[in-house]
Length: 408
Image (cartoon, rainbow, N blue to C red):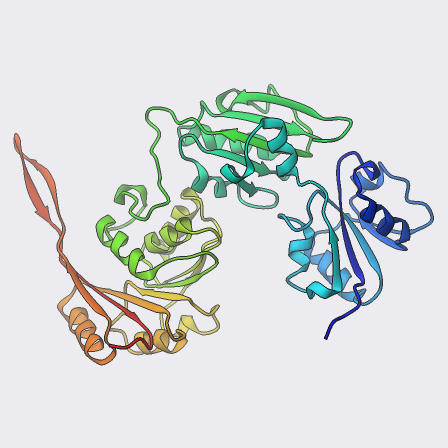
């Protein structure tokens, strides 16, 4: 059923009504009820329209819009409402044919034009209402990053994070009120920005040209981060094994992973780092390891990793449907494999590791029943032996990988 649009979302720039296109201007002039941020309302002539200042949070906004469903309503939103904006949020609750969205140039477009950075070669992220640690996944030498912020405080948090990661030499450009009459653009090294010395407008965009110090670790998004990158108690899928496991799991954009018996969360974290929008749910019973998972997720740029503390299979009930499952621990526990297999759709991968004789026997039996591929890995690393070096072997790991429903 095609509906008559009733929700109009108009992108507006910092220069107010002058930024509106012809279509946007006509829609605004016809609007009877307008929802807009106080900052926008202060700069425009609203006439005798019913005005609702946007002083509430996203959750309250959704409730309000749901209550007005079917009643013509116009929202003025900064820039492009479908690029980290309210339009993208509301689209999760309303059908596209209920909405008319007219974008203005996004803050990313305006900032890229000022910086001379091609957008297709530039990371575009939002730290507005999000943990600043999300920046970690984008920090590599030579990267260019444009970021929305919550307010002035975000600038100082970003600078502190850059310095701590060994990117203090990065050039940070602060673009305040871009496109408006109060536009101001200033550039610093990250190590030079200080809350005691600098002040900025809350409405700003950051442009970061990454430059790593000599000692800065490069944390590639290709799976296989060094073991010492993670805080762990020994329950860690080793680097070499982790790389193979992720290749079998085949992460992709917006896919959801169940990491059952997550240990320190290394597989979940690398899954999320490897693909834009990939999600992971780490299931772990041990309290100390849960703390490690949260710390590792924060320090490695995936603070949105979902942690479920509990014992499988009971803790698997009600979780978001998975696109892939990794069983790193608890394979021999009653009901764990059956619950995972039941939750997985046809054609989706399940990967399980075994170190003990008992768990390896379980994998072999599952392989005989369901097919798939068995791989046994034996890793040895060179370590000092007096004045020389010798090979230190780790326990062999058996990996079973299977696509549900695939021909054997």
